[in-house]
Length: 153
Image (cartoon, rainbow, N blue to C red):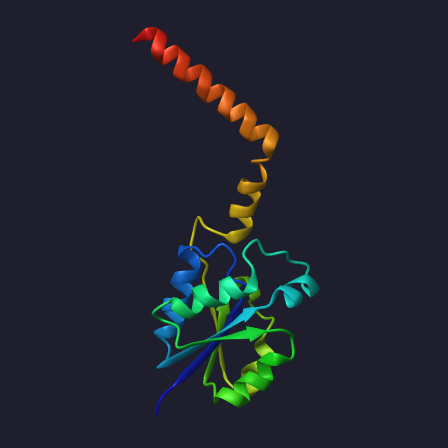
């Protein structure tokens, strides 16, 4: 009998950590369904994705481990989707550990470890440092270095 796995996420600034969790979840079953949080739902969660929902959904759907990508627009959707898609396993990153234990009455709940050294939050933090002033300073520094190299050549 085929085993269906379900997960959810924002998948903003898609990176290898996202890919790893999707691959590990696919290994837990025959079919992987991924709910991608809409921009509106992310606003409720206090998140502001950089990549628009439609593009994030398209990226996730293109991943070879994903059989179907669906919009996620509310907290209560998980139980409805479990029934709708005949889900056997609900999996999500360990940063959510304990938050979805209540789904254990319907499915096996698994929390997977994060990929070390990568996170969307950290990527956003690094990118936020590159405002126009910092970019201008970086350009000036590179121009100065370029001039020094010319003079030494």
